Image (tube, rainbow, N blue to C red; front, side, top):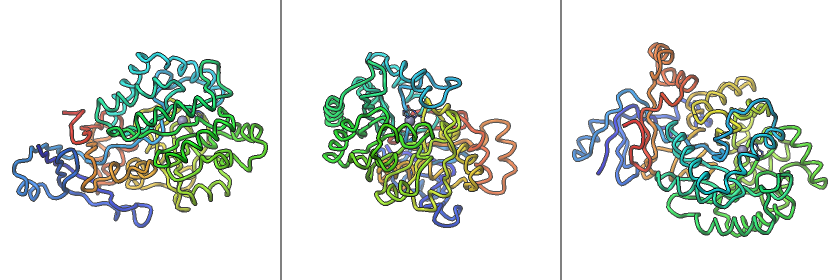
Length: 428
Ligand code: GUN
Ligand code: ZN
């Protein structure tokens, strides 16, 4: 049956970096959902009159947006989120790898996948791109958990054949063969998309990168996710491990792992050549600001990157990032924008967390916008979810000023409702 959801439907239909940000958006009174897809936007009165049979859900002053799209995270790291006192390589060895070791147990993998996807939905995130572990079971677990919730999910087996402990290493051949088998099992099944997933150059031999590059060449419609230039120590280590490479990106480029559909997490410390190549091929940089501050990685210059025309998405990077909330990610994006000299407008932050991430995943025709025909993955945000937010929001002169306190100070209490493919999954 059709559902008519009434509220402040905020449609940021054009790129808010291309002109005055507030002009990129239109506010409608209602959105019509039919057969799991967005059927129409308009005034509540018009849509009610045209669709008298539709069930009406009145969300009051809540702001209705596309569900958030978290373009880079690690569901196996939920159990060690907020671990104290280390920088990237020590953090991986001390906290991450021991936890990831547990995911050969399918029951544990399923429990952590269920927990993580429920946390994401409670925070208004309807699509995630997640790294798994080297264990194929960890991939089956997260795709099964997403399918059970009707969610679009991007995930892949994390491949590592060096600089990782015994028990967390595969080989060039087994990484290729396991990834291929999982890809054939899951890619395009329902809303699942398989991402070819070399963890990062330090944990893959050139032979493994080559094997995964060949797999990507055979399946170019798959996304490919990895990490790039997150910390300066890591960049220096890559230079030692790959003495012939021109730069970090070259370690991917020479092995067929640079291209459209490539998702490069962090990408903070880039050379001009790397930035040019990423832009030329249409690879996406995934900004993970809560992780970049938590692990002490550095300041991603969003203003400069979007001005160059770079495709950028936003992500929590849990458990490097210490929040499941894309609101918190937008707040950190704003704060880092202040430090790098670009105060981002709320329309730009919301667009990055929805359309920017969806474009990065090459899924913007299905998710991340309110275009008619898109899947009805939606979030409703209460702009007065706490006393502190409400008292500020009440003084606002326009919708942006009313919503900005929720972006800066909001958490899952601000999530008044979530719909996945038209079904209400939280807040009803
Ligand atoms: N680089 C390689 N692996 C990881 C990871 O799991 N988290 C983060 N933040 N960076 C990485
Ligand atoms: Zn990551």
